[in-house]
Structures are given as C-alpha cells and as structure tokens.
Length: 84
Image 1 (cartoon, helix red, strand yellow):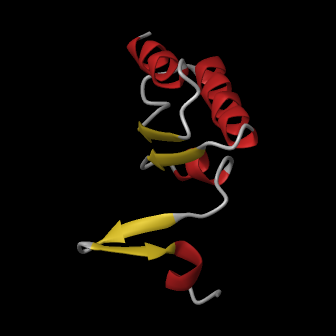
Image 2 (image 1 turned 135 degrees about the horizontal axis):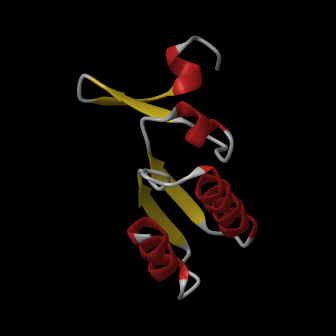
C-alpha cells in the first residue's frame, strides 16, 4: 500500500522526470502489472522515468535503455555485453 501511495504522490503533478526506487517491491502480481502500466503511460506522456531495481524483468519490460552499476561504474548494458 505504501508503495502505491508513493507512486501516486510522485505522479500527481504530471512531472517531466520521475525517479522510482524498487517500485514493485512488496507488491502482488496485480500491483506489479499496475505499476508497469503507470510507467508506460508516463513514458507515453513524455516523462523521463529512471528506475532502480534488482529485478531485471521490472526493467526489461518498460525500458528503452538499461544501465548497470558495477564497482562504482555506470555502464550501458549493451556496451557491457559488446553490442553497440
């Protein structure tokens, strides 16, 4: 419930940038689906959405670009695996 409330507060003012830290943490399957739909809607409305998550599926389903932190470095995933 707190997770959904936090997301609702973050998007009430139609922001141009949204930062979400583990947005699906503690949610049931329907909650996860709802959050993904919200993220996709924000993107469609032109918002930049930055998501921090250790759950790769959360990232892959809604992302245009994926970056990872490793040893204090941030690197685009396709660069890390040799696909530019």
